[in-house]
Length: 241
Ligand code: SF4
Image (tube, rainbow, N blue to C red; front, side, top):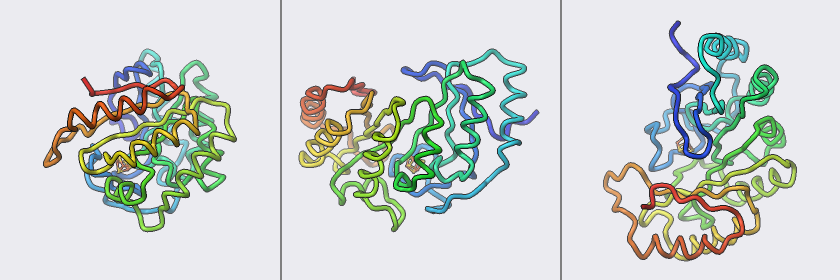
């Protein structure tokens, strides 16, 4: 059977074997991040939609599970921002009911988190992961190239509210690109916001696609590490070797 909603199994250094589950047309997002490995955003939107029926997605997951060994984690990814799938909460809840021993996670840009329904939907995941690259508006816009209705203050407030409303683990990811979000002001601001939010993990990465972007300078890497190493939450540096 041709897979419509399932991606290729991925090995994740922190989550083990991931089964990606997709539920949105490529590439539907409220951001157009410079480094996005899905390519350019073709549908830039802030509106939630029922792109595909939950039942069709569940049937494909069931069919896969019948024929394959179970994996560690189901990754509810979408081909863009997962909150844009209006049935995200129902999908996550049904998958968890059927496969309680498998962990569920999603990775969001946090742009819709001021919506209480989105926060409720994300609470269905065992681990919620969010991206936050900048706390300075100019750098936030430069790296994320977001929809005109996205406000940095809403993103930060949404993260605070989500953290206050759930006792499930939250991971934050920051991705750094030279001259995009590497001002000392931004790095210190991110450090302070992460200290306030106190996520369960803070994952720090750099652009994978170099294109015309220069690699991070040694002094920038050292400055990031000096700042983030003083956090009380666990920091993971990926690709910084
Ligand atoms: S938020 Fe994620 S999917 Fe959307 S453009 Fe950025 S990296 Fe790509």
